[in-house]
Amino acid sequence: MIGSKLPGVGTTIFTIMSKMAADEGAINLSQGYPDFNPPDALLDLLAKYARGNYHQYPPMAGVAYLREQIAAKTHALYGREVSADNEVTVTSGGTEAIFVALQALIHPGEECIILDPAFDSYEPGVTMAGGRSVHVPMRGDDFHIDWDEVRAAITPRTRVIIVNSPHNPTGRLFLPEDFAELTRIAVGNDLVVISDEVYEHMVYDGAGHTSVLTIEALRDRSIVVSSFGKTCHATGWKVAYAIASPELTDEFRKVHQFVTFTTHTPTQWALAEFLDKHPEHYRNLPDFYQAKRDVFNTALEASAFTIEPSAGTYFQLAGYASIADVDDVTMAHYLTRTVKVAAIPISVFYDAAPGQRVVRLCFAKDDATLREAASRLSAVTHIE
Ligand code: GLN
Picture 1 (cartoon, protein in one colour):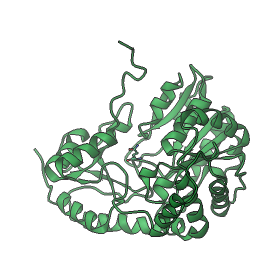
Picture 2 (cartoon, rainbow, N blue to C red):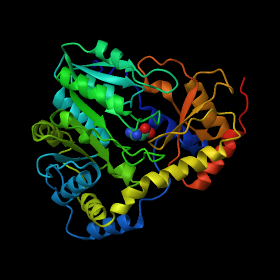
Picture 3 (spheres, helix red, strand yellow):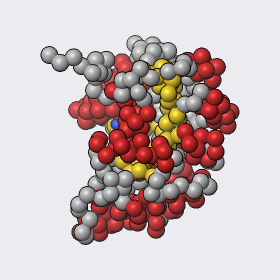
Picture 4 (spheres, rainbow, N blue to C red):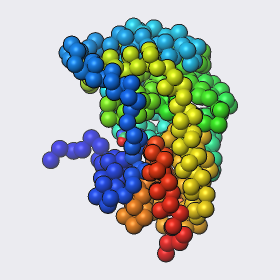
């Protein structure tokens, strides 16, 4: 038998819970994806490019028109000039971008700081690069980062720190002092920052997204990842991108070219023209998703779940301590099988989970779906 390269890894929780939701006929609020379509204008563009002569390999780094539009959007939103040629790479999903970044940056024996709870692909990416993940848990009910703990976790082998704001699964945003500490630590220890910003357009209550791209001191030491799957309600299209300095982009592309080489051509063209013609789509996204969050949370007001409104992402945490004293995997299974609303346990995002009684629910759903799910959840008062 071959020895597994990922002995501690099973099937990702998102696949497990979506399958369970389908098998059980549950409303699927587990894996994060919308139950509505991308905008009609984007679908029309996809049809247009599918009918055209756009079916062969695009450039390895991505269709130039799309990279130019990404650069224009980055400038419009974050005031940062990036070179479409040398600093933008289109990838087949955010997961590819993060994986490629980790392979490009981490040498065998080097370490990567991961702030738990963390998206489940980070650690295997580090492991496959021959590196070691060093987990620093966020603390308390507000999931704040104790930067002294981060400092204490750094060794001469630390190469990378991964950050994620808006944060999956907590819905928390980095605060200005978090960015200040991150910058001090990255510069002081010569680290590269991988900033997973796939939820950049889902930031609520007027807060506005802070991108690592706006931090001058991190300019040459960060790889920023964003995702059209999230931004355009098209998670199955698997198109995302990475922005990094020319030097980091060179290293990133060396790996990317041998992982996926490039990304589905007509989809890139459609996304490019959509960004070009419809910037209002991403500008309206915070209001669009905030309204969904509020529909869902209002419908849950009378429920026994504890809800602290999500500040970003399309995820809402729901505390169930007053309902049941069971672990969150048991609770997620119960909700899926018995209540018929599938949820994600947050313990799976930890190296060592502190045992909170909390599950994650995705509110990227039609309002009717959200109301029905909330009504089912509100019927749950006590579980022995
Ligand atoms: N980002 C999505 C989530 O957190 C899942 C992505 C995936 O299934 N790979 O639900």
